[in-house]
Length: 154
Image (cartoon, rainbow, N blue to C red):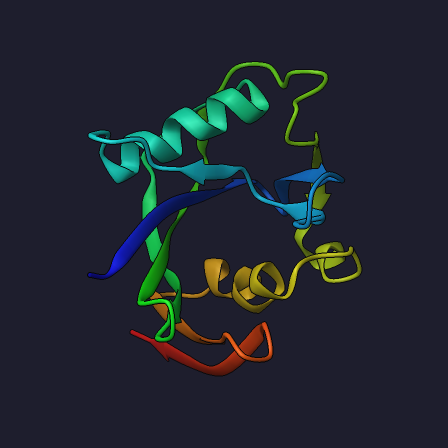
């Protein structure tokens, strides 16, 4: 039996800035776009919209699918899929503090200087390119780290 887990991530863009969360808890620290787990039987896009609202206070609309980022662990027979979206269409007011981290607008050009997880840094520039992407990371269970990384652009 294969174990599937599904998450979403939504890059919110305002001109030359994006909205990132300064996440400083658990093992996934650094600057990240809002996102999270897809709850059953919620649709993937609905989950992205909900997660942005919960984590930032903003209502997002007109999401554009940008790509899939996934980890495949053949030892544990697990596949973790993250569906990535981009939007420039939003309304509302940022919340002051989220349990996921402080939301802040960051210049796209400055984002590369911020601390980010490898998985976020790897796909960050792909949000601003034409087309979609698919990134598959093979997880090395024995070494507890990433193995081969396959990146496809369409």
